Length: 91
Image 1 (cartoon, rainbow, N blue to C red):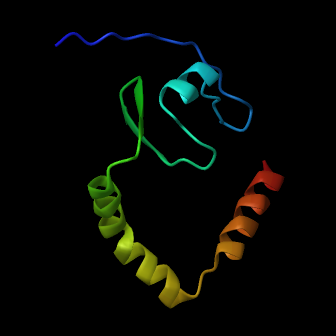
Image 2 (cartoon, rainbow, N blue to C red; image 1 turned 180 degrees about the vertical axis):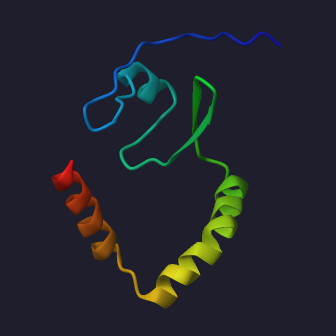
């Protein structure tokens, strides 16, 4: 099996965001809100589309204890968003 690879140069914004070029979004059928898995080692970052329900289930299982603890403590999504805003305002 021959795998053809192609590269693109992307930039990181001041907020640490990257833009996936439109040709890659179309080729990989990446939609708005699509979850991606980022795996890094050394100076390499691999971004993979999450489409395998088994992978999603494994992720959900691994974060379930954290979610339970957050719910028990009473932290809400609004609390997290406010904390993010506060940190950004202090930066």
